[in-house]
Image (cartoon, rainbow, N blue to C red; front, side, top):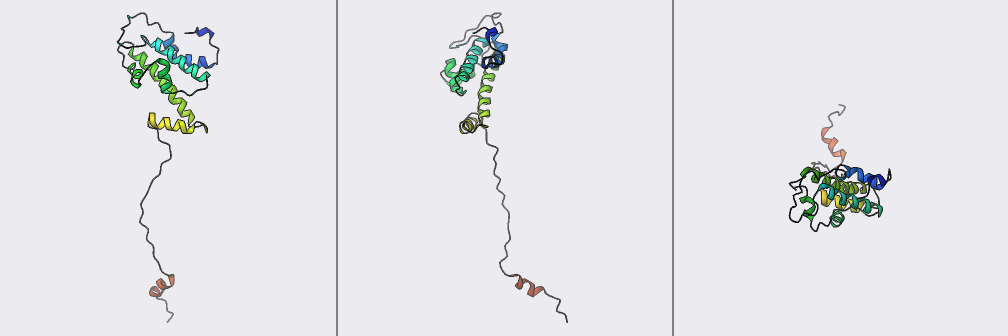
Length: 166
């Protein structure tokens, strides 16, 4: 992990560092690490470092943020691996927050894409598939009975004219 003092103010790295700062600067050595079978990251700090690295590198390369990109970078081979960290018994709250921040960044990227001419279709697809988002366009169908009379007005007036002048 690079020294936070080397991060330029206002830079891409600073933006993401500030999101993960709570976990990157926290000391987790106060508690003996419970190493679960197959667990890749012992502490939320370890996972936050990988997530921070993914978002900074991806943005610097001008690539889109994706769940699969984050999974590849963190070496999670299937969908459930990253979500399992939200249920880890040790440091549960911190692991959960790191995963939530990461997922929120990806969702935010796609929501912003809905306002872009070049990214709209892809972002719309991701928002619909991953988040159940539906566009604001709704169509309402209302059935009404409409009565149509066919004929001339002359025929109508013949039967109702009582003023004959006599």
